[in-house]
Figure (spheres, rainbow, N blue to C red):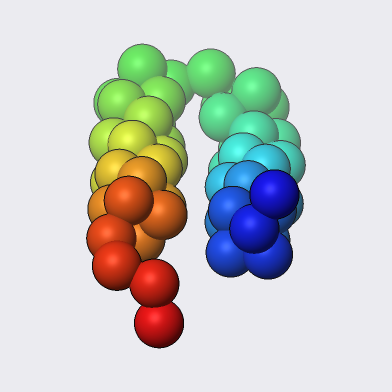
Length: 55
């Protein structure tokens, strides 16, 4: 696998681990939506970087 893919997946996992505790502790629907939208944006950016041309 490519270094860019591995480091991107580690970054996405770390983002989820960073955002999960407030979500689990507060259990607010609006907060869950904001966190999911933020994670979706990060995942889409990762997909675009992996799919794009190599540097």
